[in-house]
Structure formats: structure tokens, C-alpha cells
Image (cartoon, rainbow, N blue to C red; front, top):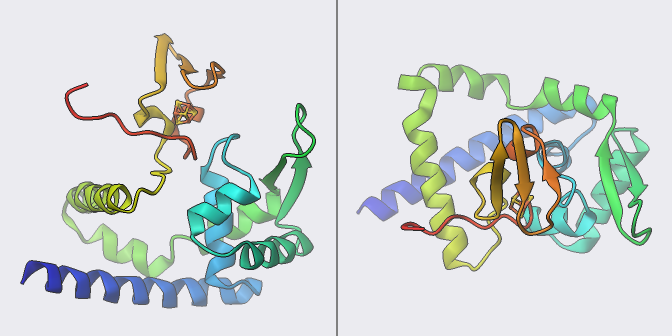
Amino acid sequence: MAADRLYVLLERLGNLLRTEERAAGLPHGLQPVHLQALRYLQSCNRYSNTPAALTEYLGLTKGTVSQTLLLLEEKGLLRKQADTEDRRVIHLLLTEAGRAVLKQALPPELFKRALSGLPGDGAALDESLTELLRALQAANAQRSFGACGTCKHFQREGSGRFRCGLTQDPLSREDSQLLCREHEGITPGH
Ligand code: SF4
């Protein structure tokens, strides 16, 4: 049955990738969860770099995430910054050292090599897996954490000028590629 076969394949891939992540983090004294936190914080936008959003994205407990943040801060890989408008909100920012570690560690070398052997560098796989992820998130009523430029609130105002229809803030081209906690996909036919 396709479901059984696909499930086993994805499970096997998940295990293999986790093993690779573990090996990549070892020289830096980091576990996979630490690398995953760094990678999320590098890819998300300014509305989504909070401890709460990170907890939701990783699907872990608050306690595990605060331990993770403590270790990353101690190692000088991230720093905390209070929001300029609401001092109760804390933003988590990667340091230069954090970016450098991430660049070295992820994606693991073995994964990059395997991917380069696929037709179109895995473009068709990317499409199918994105659809599968969307379907699972919708079935679970989970946030999509999608890229800003694919959100229903994303507005184009002219050449290189964009705006978030939810917050009314202007957005840059770079912002349009970042992950957002408030992302809502466009419903087909709209
Ligand atoms: S347009 Fe959507 S994804 Fe982009 S910042 Fe606004 S809510 Fe987030």
C-alpha cells in the first residue's frame, strides 16, 4: 500500500537525517535540537523570532526550548533583544558565530551530495513534500510557518515594494522569503 511504503520511506529518511545532524553538531557541542533552533531563527521573520514561536515551530515543551536557548546563549550563538515597542516581547537573534556554525553544519554534506544526484536537484520532490506537509498541517490545524511571499496577506505595491496586509508594515524582498508564524496560505480559487 502506498501509505505504508511512503511512511516507512519518510521515517527512514528522518532517522538518517537526524543521525547526520547529530554528527554535524558534535564538533560544536550541539544536539540536533540546537541546530534546528538556529536554523529556524535564521529563516524566520521579525514577527516570528520569539521563544513562543520557536516552541510552536519545533513542537517541543517550553522547558526544553528554554534549556536549548540557554545553551545557545551561553555558547554565544544567539542573543536576546527586547522589542522596541513592547519590552515584554523578546526577540532571539543569531550572532555571527551562530550563523557561521549553522553554515558549517547544515544541510549535512552527505545530504547535499545525495540531493545533487536527483533530477532537477530534487525540484519535483520539493513540490510533493511541500504538499504533504501542507496537508498534514491542515489536518492537524497547525500553523503553516510558510514563506511570507506565499501568504494571503502579502501585498505587492510596486517594483520591489511589498506590505503585510495583517500588520500593515512595509516588507522588503528579503522579508518575502522568510518564514512567518502568522502565515496563511492562499485558498485555491482565490
Ligand atoms: S504577509 Fe503573511 S507571512 Fe508575511 S508578514 Fe504578513 S502575515 Fe506574515
